Length: 351
Image (tube, helix red, strand yellow):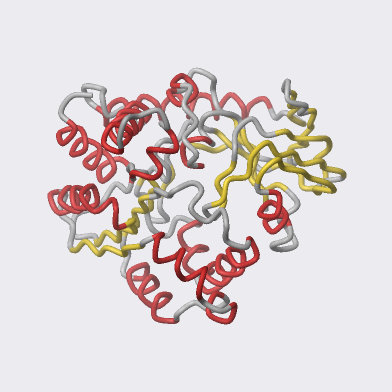
C-alpha cells in the first residue's frame, strides 16, 4: 500500500461524491467512532470542498458504551433521550445527507447479557422510528462505510506484529474492495453500477418463482419469491431524484421473498456480528415462512434475542445474490463486519 494519506483522501472524496453524493449548500451529518477521527476529518474536508453548508459530527465511543452496559440499570437502557431524536429529525427535515462510519470491535460486548443489548437496541430503534422510516424511504441521501480501528484490525489480521501493521493491512483491504486503487475510482464505481443494473434487468425479466440454496455445510433451503417481486441493488435515488449509494462497498442485488414460502435449513458460511457480539456456525430451520428451530456454536443467546425481538424477526425480509467474482470474496478475508461480509456471499435478512 503506497501513500496511505493520499489513498485516504481519495476514499473520502469517493464517499462524498459517489456515496452520499453531497449537493452544494447541503448539510452533512457524520456518525463516527472517536477512533476514526482522522478519517472523519478528511470526510468533512471533502464535504466542504464539495460545497457543504455545514458538517455536523455525532461521535460515539464503544468503550463508553461498554461501561454503560456494565453499570446502568435496565430502566436507563430501555430509554432513549428526546434531544437525540430531535437533533436527528432537525437535520433530516432540513434536507441533510447522512454518513455513517461503521467500525466496531467484533467481540467487545461478548460478556454483556444479550437481553441488555436487545433492550437498548429496541429503545433506540423505537424512538428513532420516524428517522429510520424516512431514511429507508430515501427522503435524504445516506451512506454507510467503514474505516479501521485497532481492535477490529487485530481481529481480522491476528498474525500481525503490532496494531500499526494490522491497521495498514485493513486499510489496504478496504481500498481494494471500494476500488480506491483504480486510476479513477468514481468511474470504476459507475462501471460497477452499470453491471449491477444489467444483472437486475435480467433477473426482473426472468420472473423466477423461487430460489433454491444448497451448500456443503448443510444448507438446503427454498425461498419462494413474492408475486410481482422486483430485484434492486446498487445506486438509489432520493425522493427528489438525487442518486446515491447507501453502502460502500455493495456488490449485491436483492428482492423480497414470499413470507409464507420459506422452507428448509440455512447454515451460515460466515459469522454475524450483531450488536457487537459474534454469532458463529449458526443454522436456522424454516417451516411455512418462519424460523422454527435454530442453533449456534457461539452467540446462541444473542441469536435467540434477535429472533424473539419482535413478531417479524423469525421471517425474512430480503434475499440477496452476490457474484463470486466481486472484490470481497476474491480477497478471501473474513472482515467480522456485516457491511463487508454480507457482500462476500449470498445472504438473507431477518425481519
